[in-house]
Image (tube, rainbow, N blue to C red; front, side, top):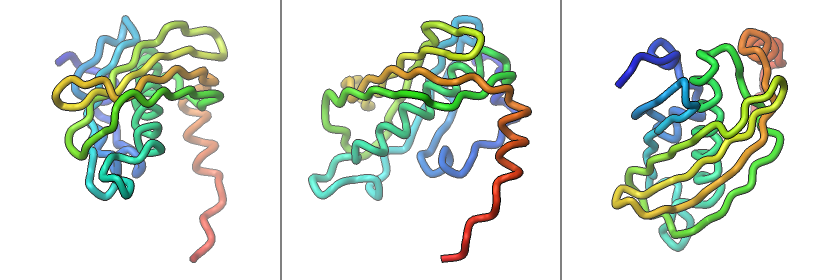
Length: 150
């Protein structure tokens, strides 16, 4: 695999929870492949990975496609995301792929999909995301008030 901006990147807690790990990327093409852990803890009563978790995986695939394409200069804030659930996701490895379809000055458009280990297409998504300079996004996050104790 080629070197990317993620080589020295510490994943946020939400990504760690999902088991996020970079599998492959073509930064110049705006394409990325991410691995996730479809944990049993993520399952609904029917025994399938819950749709909200799959949506989070898609979001955590499409945003990084922009991040890797811009060499870490631009962070995305999701404006809209449309998800289509195509097959039930059983616990186990899940792979996400995303491709930046258009990178504008303030908004990016990205397509993503999730596949099961056997190649079954689980879900697809499209997103429009506001582009924010990474340094500003990180500075803004550090100014947020601490969470109230439970």
